[in-house]
Length: 493
Image 1 (cartoon, helix red, strand yellow):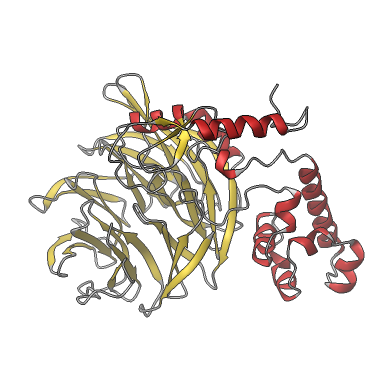
Image 2 (tube, rainbow, N blue to C red):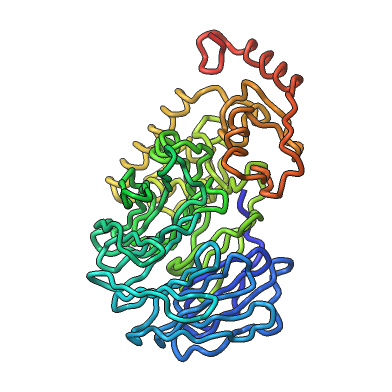
């Protein structure tokens, strides 16, 4: 479940961006400042705010080590700061003096990209703090940027709707029209998917003024260049989507929109086919409604925190407290038990997802929870909730009927402890890892084979890769399967 643990209200104007390092949170605003907070207690650091930009600060980002912070502004510059004492290390002026909209460090901190309103993109050498290479997108302002995890290439998004792939020598590898009304943000998952010896594939999300979030597969090969393949569109928002970001482990995607909502999309599948298939039927939950447009959202690395920023001048910090990694307050199954236990907030989230946003105020005023939702009738909608529109009443009843049909066909609920935390499927060969958690053997071996030595549950380093068969859990799963009625989805064949 996602719990609001802190609201930061130190900025005096709209929040434009927020970013995490392993120990700090940085926020920037139209008020020309960058503020830094400690993750230990969210107190503002002694040298914060950082001042120096003459106009609005549009973006900020940490280097991978967290020791350096970059910020960019309408004043046409990108500034580099030492996060240990707040010293300004460099001012990097965009050659065209155009307002700089986005900046990103490469994974190895070798380069810093800055993109501007005139479409110019500059690659800065971070050792010399000098311009290394530069280029231009063909049309529009450059407003979004994301590096691949290996640093071999980066993607930019423009206000004309194009996504462009560049290599680390600033060679344009590929260009794709992605969003008709303009790209607003993009992010690449930290999970590379290898195909053969020379090619790597990455999952990327982009969002835009067309109110859509699109998922893409980026294929990159040393000799064949790069290719962007559209996979699917995620629904949920009813207005332009201004921000999207993957969680550190690639298991979740968050988005924020002009519709004042934040949506979490969740997946535990890691192969290309399964991942895309799961996203087509993605579990998602609008878990917070903000008073103004949501302009930015970011997951913290290694800890279960999410930051969302808004035009209401505040940054909200959310903590995930469920057992699953980065699980959030997700409506997992529309089963009879789950819906009946929905809170009032869950019902409001369901209304948003179903396109019934106009009814949120009425349902909130009448304290409609899951049990009340299932009991709604034509008469109660008209006489008690005073919904005058026949069309709205009919749509609500139709959606409730769909909900009941899903409940009737819902599969048997599998005990959570029998599910692998990685795949979220019933375990067949459970093993215990060094972090003390049990996983499906094949899933954990795949996790470890991708050169990660971190726990899928905690993201902390694993002291050992030794896997011990969990025979007692396997026996318990077998007994549970045998107890299921014949013909049920969970019953053994």
